Amino acid sequence: MIAIDAQLSPQELLRQGVPEHPLLRPEVVQAVVAAAQSLFDGSLSDLEQDLSRRRQGRPYLFAAELAGVTSAEESAQVVASLIAYEQARGVSLSQVLQEDSR
Image (cartoon, rainbow, N blue to C red; front, side, top):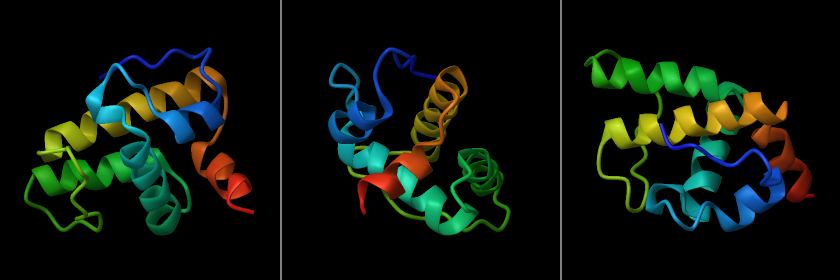
């Protein structure tokens, strides 16, 4: 898991990503949050479980390839990092993304 500074606002995370971590570029963060929003009613935890099923060879929903994310393990790392951030901040990135798109 990649630690994301909880001082970073959700809007900054979605717009700028975490520049020092190539896996957390803004387009990757936005794509993961949008996938969770579309497939799992915004739940990154449900997306994380889906990725786990994919790695286990079980049926899964999220099959999108993310630019610069080369494996299911890296996808899981991104999702775990975003979950930890949400928990530390007490926010839903899916809800912030939805509010920003209005």
